[in-house]
Length: 139
Image (cartoon, rainbow, N blue to C red; front, side, top):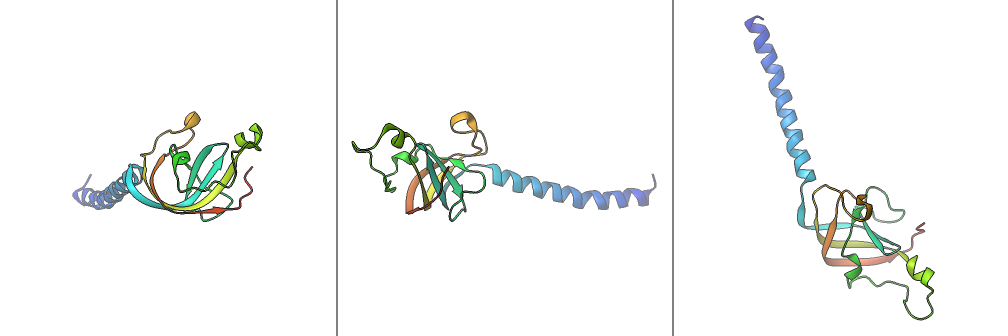
């Protein structure tokens, strides 16, 4: 291989290496855990399981949801169904609801979370700034 061919090869390899390194840095940044971040999106409660759809302003929920292990304990939600003596077991077990929220929480690194390990991220809520109940046809 001539010296000119070696120089040309080096000139091509350097930009490709820089692009690959930049892509790796961006990917690692997106995959890491992000504590204390603020999120806007949709919380969906379906049979006492809570999912968060980031960036989704209204129904229907779209995209990949995050698992929310501590959502039932949040006092900011005004669940619009009662759990009084008039509710049947079926109504309680099939309770559903959706809220558009702005919240602060700790987002996990990419992994497998929740029941059946079907969620790629987990969001542990630390503070709710706003929660507005919305009508959703949840199936």
